[in-house]
Amino acid sequence: SSGLRMGRLSDDPLSAVAAVDEHAVLDRLDAYQGAGDAASYRLGLADNVMTDIINQLTSAQTTALSARGSEVTQGTRDTAANELLAIRDALMSDINTQFQGAYLFSGSNVTVAPFSASGGTISAYQGDNDTNAIDVGSGRAVASTFDGGAILQGSDPVHLLDTLTNLAAAISAGDAAGIDAGIQALNRGFDRATGAQARIGNDQRSLDDVRAMLISGHAQ
Figure: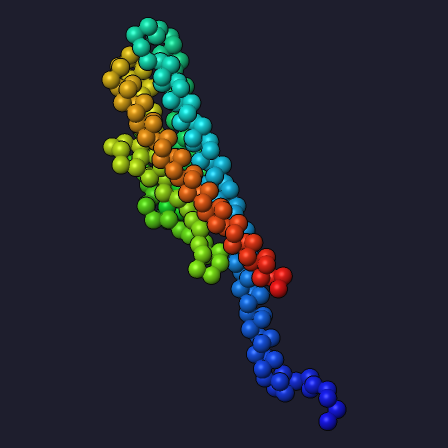
């Protein structure tokens, strides 16, 4: 015997199977890495949106508190009301954010904007409470869309966009009870928004862990 291995795969079926398995594993790792890149972009964008939503709600809380009290002038109340309406419009723009043509905050209903306005009236939430996810590793998935209704309304009777409209009207009218109710609704909305951002952060950390394992798998 010459001691040389033959060049045909059929001459060494165990090595052939091992080679096929290795290629399958590498292909799967590459697929997960591609999915991880897509998920990272989506989660990063969602995190940025939530940061702006939280900042807008903080501004709304400060503005509403500054307009409360019998000593506040009508001019100050009207200015505050206009600021709240501008914040409302900014929030609507945030929650209607798209990524590659798909709405991030419409749940699984990605082709429809979460909220729309017509004739000065803002719609109810147009998405659903299902969310899409991306498989980024074996048995590991992260969210790729989010429930905008849960963020802007939750269990409240109206969503935050209408809350800001009503709060602006209450401030202009000097309606103390309406102002207090609006501030309380903003506080609840703030809690929902910070909770949503925390969940996005958890997914980002989970994704980082998975990607580190995938890089390690490629290196082996």
